[in-house]
Image 1 (tube, rainbow, N blue to C red):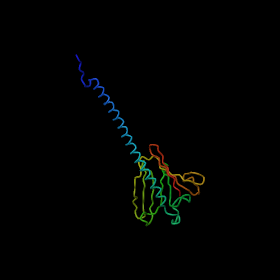
Image 2: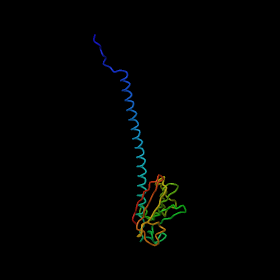
Image 3: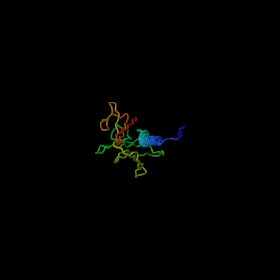
Image 4: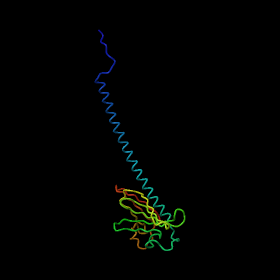
Length: 188
């Protein structure tokens, strides 16, 4: 008598195949979840870097468009160590406020632009002679430190340490609450 075998799979073979497919599905799902999570973090970091680049570019543009020394009637700064169109003030909490007298965008008159840190937010304030109400723009959030240093012939110094030596460049530094620190040097 001839024994006839069936051409199908056994139950054990089917269970092993389904288990392997389930295991591969779980591994693939976890990998895809990790990739999507990393993508979201990278997008968030990209947005933060873009805000930082825009903020520093705005500060640099305001410094580049400051009123020339020859056009000032009297120096606006505390001494001759900074250009007359720039001042740096420090409050009792050692927070700095950078103020720049620059040309108005429409070409008529001047505009006083200030940068300051207020409760973790870097803010740009602009006041023209025609308006008494400042125009306030939030540049960045989660900022721990906004500060400046100045390059003198003897090295980097705070504005109060320059002592009648003209500053050659300004270093603008922004430190985030997460610990990252960004700096930009702008020649004066």
